[in-house]
Length: 208
Image (cartoon, rainbow, N blue to C red; front, side, top):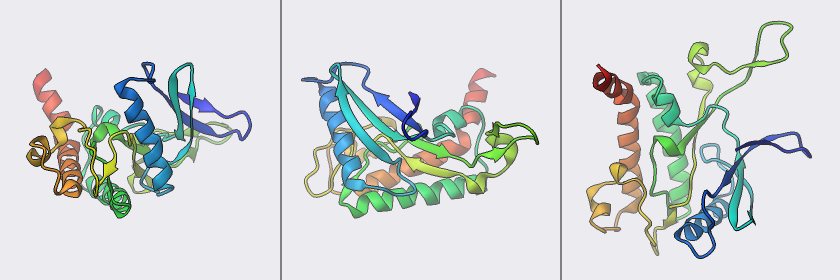
């Protein structure tokens, strides 16, 4: 949910568990995400965490609101050019470097878990709104990519692996070989970059 905090006037993203979490497999993932955010603190390329609480047996997590949506949503509209892919690669790699520096691994890097923030530009003179049409602004260098959804994060030293999307995982992890989990994150990033260039073309070919 996109929510406005009445106290500070800021917009946040609120994640609410779809199902009740107490005693379910979702409880572990939800708590794991909160713990991971608490350890990681703040980095420009990781979605910022603010707070979490339980309400009516559902877990709610207050995160930074990313006004550009997810990378997956963008790729459903168009492919990324080479310059955009380089920026995406650099920024997500920086986020992974930060996560790995805390002896943690993400385990679920994919387009749906990478979020976008983009600058807000004043619209036409006399209009109090903002122009957020990224595709027409051609201002991709000002865009920031952020890693989100930390529910599968685990320790490198004592891994308790809850595998993410198997389509983005290397064969070693699928075969329960957890000796190089950091490399698994990099593999997933490589698949995501490849998808960023070819996803739309693949979809178009299917439709045709």
